[in-house]
Length: 262
Image 1 (spheres, rainbow, N blue to C red):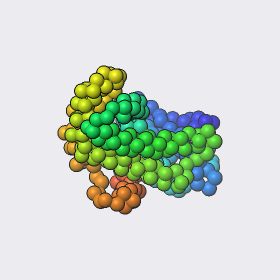
Image 2: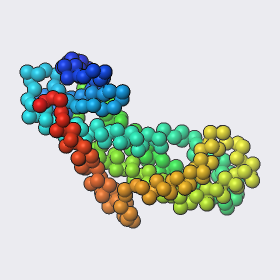
Image 3: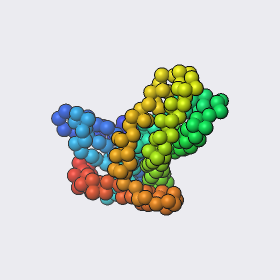
Image 4: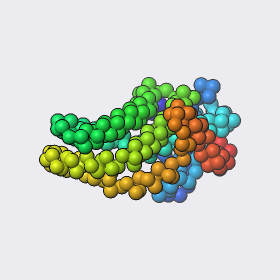
């Protein structure tokens, strides 16, 4: 695949404008045995234009190249959204939960026990979110390692992944907002029981920021475009449906201004 990317880069240079840089999305879309790559032209890190190329012009079919634009555009925009939505929570150190939970489980205190139950629920959702995020990028790593192209399976995976991440993110914020008083009481009880200082400074800051960001979190909850319904399966289904046509208008505009094929 690296050789193909190198050939695509050589072809893409012909369409580069002054001060632009070329960025090639490494995983192509395959049509009739031909790999089609999406190339982005950037100027000062801002997208200026897009093109679709195969490694060899003589093997390329303009109609197929144009056909490849839709799944490539959607997949890579979804991948970026997955990174934006999931990265911050997926990179949270698990010890931020594990160590405080182990401390609060050692003391007979009803306030600590209530907080322990809430944080355990939150931690489980955090683990599930991290697994969904890691699974997606793990599948992409396998594709790169095996030099295989993207397919409808991976586009469907991207849609499912972003929907699940958004849902877990929503559930975590919703649970936190609903139980913020429990968290505040748990922090006070941890201090009372002399357990607060046994946590690392980063762990203490982590929980303090959760409390301090209460208002911001509630505002973010209101801004999330999630249909409120009790059935999680239906909620996931409706969220997936939303992302099936993700950035459709932007995709149509990008297609209309393709630098290649014309």
